[in-house]
Image (cartoon, rainbow, N blue to C red; front, side):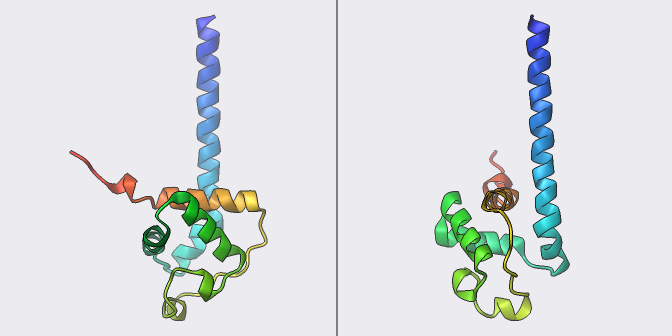
Length: 118
């Protein structure tokens, strides 16, 4: 009986890990590939959203608002930023997928993960 439970837990963990990896791959292919190609400073964007909104939920909502209606007024970036980098095009994507990709973006550039405590 213990072996069956162990195998079920192992299967669940493997399934969860592969699901998380596929979400990261989706973020890479849909978002970060273009950001990298245009040399957009992702960490700078993350920091500006963090300073202005401070919580992940507020940051997620603000980024989603910008991605649904990409205007300079909806962005935290200063107007000169858009002289150097292209304006995001309107995304025709499901809100659930957009929210998941936004959360993955925030997790990827999360400042807390970069802190090293002794």
